[in-house]
Length: 305
Image (cartoon, rainbow, N blue to C red; front, side, top):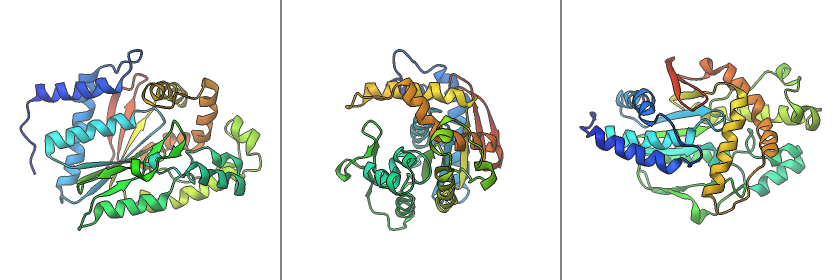
């Protein structure tokens, strides 16, 4: 499969049209064409180069802190890989595999109250993710449905609202904030890193259990062929980006209730330990690192292996 001849002015128009649908008037996406040239096109070419070596289905992991732009990036990559190289792309978000609200309520009663909040390892259905990967890679592919999670209601949608996959993909993009994360040593868990851990997990039950669950995520992470990591400037930036996400959610969701600033601060404390660990070990866990600035622009791309 070779690169398709393409009218780049037409490509630019379609790309800009898509990005316009993703921005809000108060927070426009900046440097759109710059991002296309310095980020999206090189990344698309790299993914294609991985696929063309043996033309077998590849799973590309995309990881990074909350609000780093993973959902937008995956959608643009899907568009470009189809337009430029004719590749079928299936996007799998780990967020869509959160356990139901009822399942998390049971975990909060049985194990620890903090498991009521979605996000950390243990609150995803990794067996279901594994089943989806197997279905996507089957030689005798048959159309099927992928779960869909609605953050505005904090619950999984009913099956009739799930996403249908009609074609066998060439590329599977598996995105999520903790994709590729590695568990910590027990000694590293002892010191609380924020108010949430100090106040609600003084006995270490929650963080130890989260760490145990993360070990089990290896069975899906090892299926990833290459991992792209989006390196945010600092952890504080995640708060501002997550706040922006919540504003966009209010504009696009039927349910207009969103989290307040204080609720968001509390929410991201659940993610803080693993997020900071990934930021520290990003060169170890990934194959390509994208260094982002505070405006979501790619400052540079580092190819590792």
